[in-house]
Amino acid sequence: MLLALLVALLGAGGPGFVPEARAATLTEVTGFGTNPGNLRMFRYVPDGLPAGRPLVVAMHGCTQSAAAYDAETGWTKWADQWGFALLLPQQQSGNNLNSCFNWFESGDIRRGAGEALSVKQMTDRMKSDLGSDSARVYATGLSAGAAMTNVV
Image 1 (tube, rainbow, N blue to C red):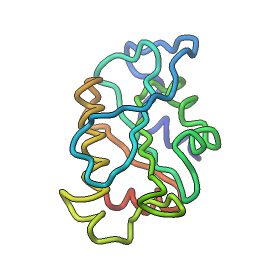
Image 2 (image 1 turned 60 degrees about the vertical axis):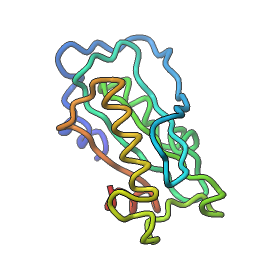
Image 3 (image 1 turned 180 degrees about the horizontal axis):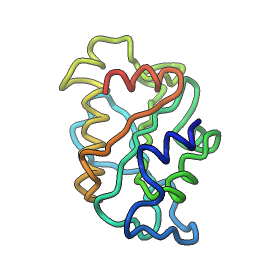
Image 4 (image 1 turned 90 degrees about the vertical axis):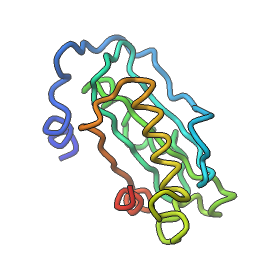
């Protein structure tokens, strides 16, 4: 099902994308905006990814980190295979003891505020840095991360 969704949304690698041997790593990015939700930003960009490719925002579930969510789902592998940039926002235990995104807190889900704005700022930074296709930005998640997709 996930594979079919990726093919439908992203295309089979797209024009001009040739996957290379995997050398890219999940990297933390700082300075992506005012970050009112106090989230951490991790990104994965396949080696040789050209501008104009899609961006996937993947949000972890409670008690997970960005790296753990990737390890359990293989999002970086899919990014390599299908040629898209990957953004993995990460909650901090100081915001929520179980590291859940606060999809139930009005201050975190209101447009232009809290965690919702932090994710938007991360997305804007990715689009700016990589030239991602603004018409092909997708959000997905697990548990609280899935609930947060409704917000973004």
